[in-house]
Length: 147
Image (cartoon, rainbow, N blue to C red; front, side, top):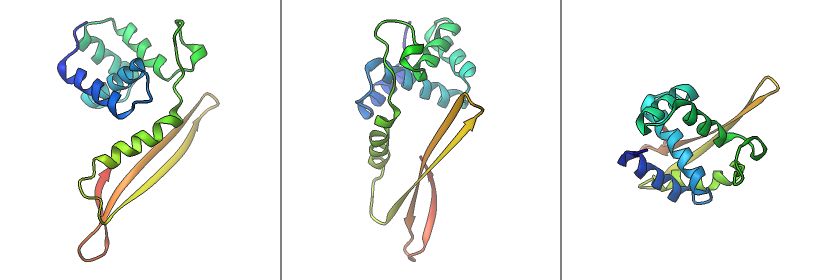
């Protein structure tokens, strides 16, 4: 399986920005996010198909790898499987976002969270941050920055 340079670079970048993740966790997260950005979709089947084609592997193998990334430890196959503790990701993600600011003067950061339950099986916790800055006139201007 030959990995394109752009994906290799992204895997390394994600691993550096989220050092608490194991190498396999960082790699699969990077593959997920790279695939979503490239196909402009977050659908498992779409992303798995794209990555399988890109990495010259079977689509079902890629789908399983992506699915196991967010499964609990007891639901994964293999001996060395780890469960991802998403609470450990918040600080590194926020540090990553803040590192993208060139000038932190007169900027404000707004955090938003929403928990949506889909039946009794699945709960989605969405976190977002919005970046705004004060204009020269002193009024709050939404810069359209969303992370």
